[in-house]
Amino acid sequence: MNIAVLGTGSVGHTLGSKLVERGHTVMMGARSESNERAAAWALGAGPLASHGSFARAAAFGSVIINCTSGTASLAALEMAGADNLAGKILMDVANPLDYSSGRLRLTVVNTDSLGEQIQRAFPRTRVVKTLNTMNCQVMVNPGLLPGQHAVFVSGNDAQARAEVAGYLKDWFGWPAVIDLGDITTARGPEMLLPLWVSLMDVMDTTIFNVTIVR
Ligand SMILES: NC(=O)c1ccc[n+]([C@@H]2O[C@H](COP(=O)([O-])OP(=O)(O)OC[C@H]3O[C@@H](n4cnc5c(N)ncnc54)[C@H](OP(=O)(O)O)[C@@H]3O)[C@@H](O)[C@H]2O)c1
Image (cartoon, rainbow, N blue to C red):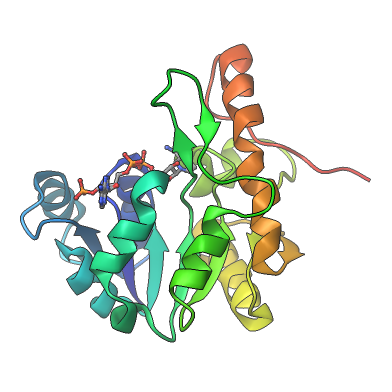
């Protein structure tokens, strides 16, 4: 499958490399066609990997993964272009984190979420919030941790949520996915981030996840 990974940070690199390893053709998108991090990734990841602008990557992908900085995701997706995103699943992995005051705050919270903002801005795109609640090494390799631990999907299109649950299983090996419902349910997973950051400090590692028991 042609997959667009929008974002040149550690999440874009980790997801892109795993998808190439699984035999997919992946284009990494950035603001500039000649982004050095994207170029280096494509060179190292082999013939199934390429890179380009956000717009070229979005046009290339049958599925798009938003791995951009949460405070810049709307701007990055505008650059990707509404027409290039139309009719496609956009997996939104981003978190609306703002450290500008020196302490973590979420730029959108309680009555709204980044996932909802993206869905409103791109109504022709099927936005599914997922994978934002764990480190990217865990995203692509849930077996790093013992037992069954949680990954969520939120989105307005039930078929898109089911498709993404299938991708999470086939691409990365997530055996079970918790379907939270429509895109307003993205608020919860995004609001887990302050807890995630506190846990990172006390666990002294980024390789952990939450488990849901009943
Ligand atoms: N790190 C993790 O393990 C982890 C886990 C869960 C969720 N997340 C979330 O995943 C996302 C990616 O994280 P990351 O650490 O890999 O990367 P990041 O540093 O948060 O974001 C890098 C990307 O954001 C783009 N960007 C930055 N400012 C921009 C602007 N003003 N306009 C347009 N695009 C802009 C950059 O574009 P250029 O390439 O053009 O510079 C780059 O592609 C974040 O939202 C993060 O919260 C991260």
